[in-house]
Length: 111
Image (cartoon, rainbow, N blue to C red; front, top):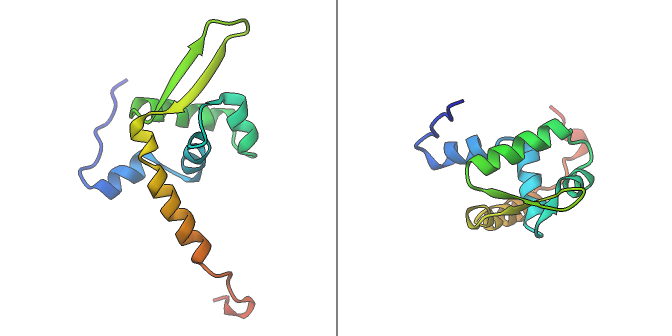
């Protein structure tokens, strides 16, 4: 399976790689340190195993996370952000700051 090339525009490239709210929330969790699959699922109520697996594979393809398998019984697998993935810390912090500044909508302001 060939991997499609990414757009030239940085914003479009970001949106292609970090596609959707689950991706951003997975990165948020991994910014705290390495996590196992089950830890990520528990931290993200509502995410399906398929979606989590898909996003983690996509991140690995783009060099955002590494997947380490430990030779134990049962096998232990950890996901960790790469330096490229760690670069998302400032982006998520800016998103958090901006999101907290957005006021709750007025009840009568519905259009």
